[in-house]
Image 1 (cartoon, helix red, strand yellow):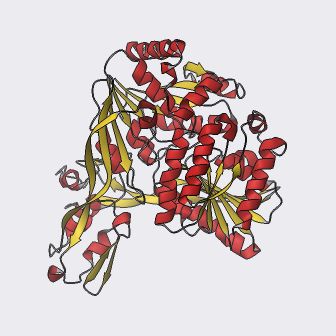
Image 2: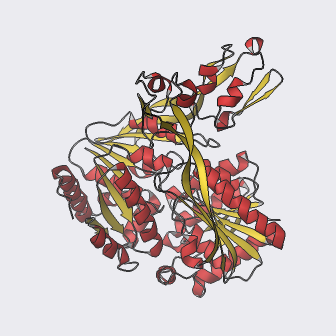
Image 3: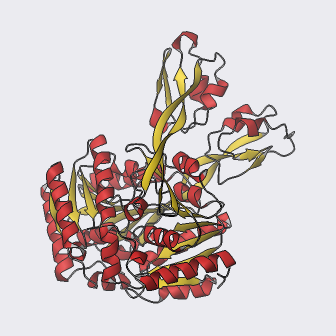
Length: 280
Length: 278
C-alpha cells in the first residue's frame, strides 16, 4: 500500500485545495484528513458519515474531595502547574499521573478524557476518514495516528492508494502524519515565509528518511520569489513538480464548497498529481 | 496589555497583523513569535538578534548500578517513554513529557534529572520593537515547553504571534492574554476554523475581536457569524497585490502604505482603551 501525505510547514498554502483536486482525478484512493484541530477537507468532499468512534486521548486526575486533606503534595510534584491542593486545572494538565501516584491519601484517580471523535464516511471520490479534536483538548498526535490507522486499514483491504491532507507546522501532529509515508508532497507559496518553512519541513522529512517532492502554489503572485524557491529545490536535490498559478476562481469554487475542477489552476494541480503518482 | 494574534486556519495573515501592529504602536512593544515550529515574524521584522538561550527539557538520566529492575518507572510513565530489559533501561527522549514521575518514584534513586535542549529563544530588537522568538529544534515533537519559556519574556505591552490551529501550542500561546485578535478569511475554511478558535477562546476566557483578511475574496458568512455571536469585526484588509507582494518579499506593508500604518495605530489605541466591544 502506498501513501502520500500533503504537507507545507506554513499554513494556508493550499494543502486542502490540492488534495481536493486529487480527489476528482478518479484514482482508486482512500482520503484522510490529518489536520485534526482544524480539519477542512470534509467541506470539499461532503462525506456521508457511516461510522463514528469516540477518541480518548489522555487521562486526567479526579480528586475525591472527601479524602483530600489539602496537604499539597500534588502541587509540589506537578511540573505543569495543573493541580493546587486537590484543585485540578484541566487546561494545564498533561495527564502524567504523577499526582495520582504521589497522593499520600490515595484521593486521586485517573479518568479517561473524551478528546475528540473520529469519523469514516463515503464520498463521490472514495472512502474518507477524518476527525475532530475537542475544544481545548490535547493529544492531537495520537488522534492523527488513529486517523491514519483506520485509513490504512481500508486502503489495505481495498487495495487503494492513501492520500492524507496533513496539518501545518513540523511538530507532534506532523511527525505523526509523516510516519510511514511513501512520499511527502510539500505545497509551498512564493513568499519569504513559504521558503523558510519549506526548509524546516525538508529538514524534518530528511530526519525521518521520508522522500519529499515540492509544488509551488499561487506561483504568479511573485515570479521572482517563485524562481528562488525552484532554485532552492534544485540546490537541495529535491524533486520540483510544478508551478500552479494564482487565480480567484479557486476562492469561487471554495465558496461553493467544491474542489476546483476547471481552469489553469485545476490543470496545473492535476499535472502536479500525475507527477507525484509517477514517483511512487 | 497582552494581545495574542491567532487564527484557526493557517496562512490567513497572523504574522502580517502581529508585525504591522507592533510597528504601528506608539509605545515600545515586545513582539513574541510563538509559532515555534515555523516562526516567520523575523522575516518581516528583520531584527538584530542579540542573544540566544537554549530551552532545556528535563529528562531522566539512568544509573544502572543502582537499578534493581523493579519496574516502578515503567509503571508510572504515562507516555511509554521507558522500556526495561533486565536491568537495562531504554529512554525514548522524544516521547518524554518531562513530568518527573520516574525520577520521583524510583525507590533506588537510579534515575536523576538531566537536561536535553529542544529549542532556542532568540532575542533582539528592530527599532523600538523588542523581539523574542522561540525555535523548536527540527525533529522535536513538543512545542509547548518552548512556548512556555517564551511567554516568560512578555512585558507591559506585548503582542504574541501565535501558531495556527486550536490545540495545545495555541492554548499555551494565548492563555492569560488580555485580548485575542483573531485573523480569518471569508471562506468556508476560514469560517469553520474561526468558529473552533472562538470556542477555544471562550474556554480560556480571553475576549476576542476579528480581523478579516482578503476581505473581498469570499462571501458574507464570516461577518454574519460574527454578528450572530456578538464578536466585533475590528478591521478588514482587502486582497491587494501590493500587500501580497510586500509579504512575499518580507516587508511589513505599513512601511509602504501610510494609510495602513494609521489603521493599525488606531486599532492599537482601541485595544488600549478597551473600545473593542461589538
